Image (cartoon, rainbow, N blue to C red; front, side, top):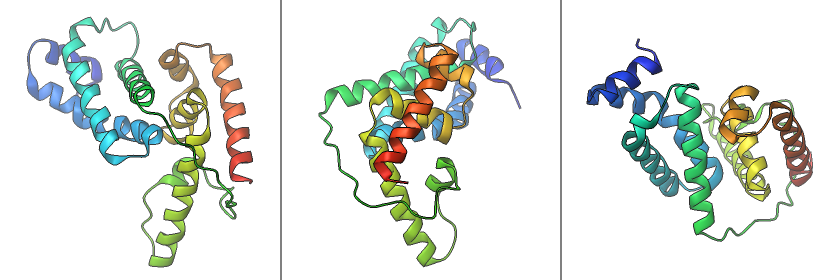
Length: 186
């Protein structure tokens, strides 16, 4: 399997198959980040499409000073902010408690359920509660929780993506998790 840098170099040289491989490699993560911000499949699809159009259009400006994924996620974050700035968000108050799920990670809770019908219903309800709670967080906190707890991106890479220090990533993540717990009333 070719590395990101190898694929980028091939794509810069006009090999469309290399760019298609980049899309295949990152489409799910880009969609998931967008979905955590928009909670809309259609808007998330639009964001992902716009992200990959921007990546393709600006691929020659990628200077390989950071990881390709960092550059891609920065474009994704910016595109999410563009979508959120275009619409006025209506926050939903959450009065339901999230019980029995505090020992699972956000990634596990938001993962697609694969068990029986009752468990699927409970998981879907839990996913809905968490997604609504995420929408109540300020954008910077929502992004940091998504990148770290859902996408499992390192603190260092998050700092590069969000253009903040590693220390600030940790502080914002702590504050975001605290607010999320208070919203969900864990």
